[in-house]
Length: 175
Image (tube, rainbow, N blue to C red):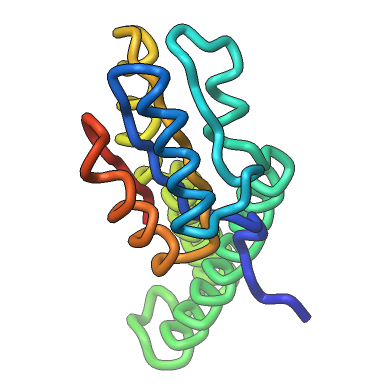
């Protein structure tokens, strides 16, 4: 059984902002030739590009599956934790929990489920993507060019960062 919650093929992203088109094109060629990145893993976002969101998040179905799956998994874990705590309280807890075990189970199961769902929601927000998205949108509004590089891990993300850092105005990456 596959236990990976996030099924994106390229979950790590890097945004490198450039002041003109030629620098962005040269940087893309450097990524392909020197860094051995694939062309399809690099998106060029021009100023006021209408497809910016699609270029930043290129796997919307995988993201939707991640959100759904994380809510089911963490909601279920929260439910189980709530039931385990309720069992412990009914067996050896305060007299109130021992005298009405059904209410104890219901209350702690609901609380556990909600805590699990809240945690899944926090994961689904992907706060590490906010700086990348904000920098890309700001660059587009200020007539700057951005390269979005999608990688499968930290090693390739660091390699892309090292290749882009000398010529880019700014470089932002996700986890």
